[in-house]
Image 1: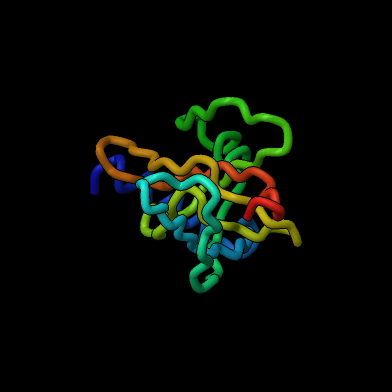
Image 2: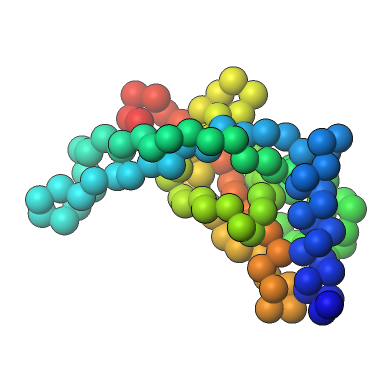
Length: 129
């Protein structure tokens, strides 16, 4: 196994650890394009919700010095999820009874192995959803 694969096994172990992880309800969303190719004024269509597991990024950052995360803005949350999950920006996430949207989704590589995904959640403005 390479070092990247070893790190992925460790991170996946954290995400699957029932004592550490949290569950999020992920609802994939499709934003339809308008006839002129834009997205203005359209309402997203929600797909079928499913449960995914995540670990707060601060937990991983404190445990490993390997990952560098930028600062969050007020009201944002960052989680790490498995690199195997199908997640997109603008998907809806329900966490702790509140709805959020994925503002940023990015894969975290380590020695050319995608060890996890980082997602940043912002509160969903229900009037615009």
